[in-house]
Image (cartoon, rainbow, N blue to C red):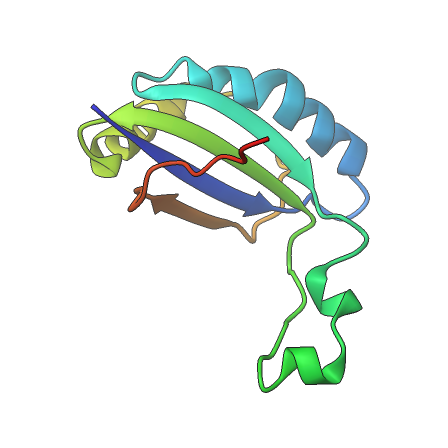
Length: 123
């Protein structure tokens, strides 16, 4: 079994952020980690300060740092032979999920497979 991650960037429907956050944190994360192959889930909110905000023009060079369409991020860890195996299990489970229309229509969903081992700090 290999470890993969699923990255989901999303936003609430206008004016329904509290409902969206309650559903995502209290219902949806728990539903997803019950799917075979999904071993953990965690949500994040976009930080106020980004790298682009503190770089000088010389440090930026010719790189373009865009704006994020989404303020919220969920990262799911998957253990499966392939990311496709876990995603297929998610697809099959999805009709049984308690979804909400407080989840906006624009989503960015990407699966990643590691290409290196984890590098950790050494103190």
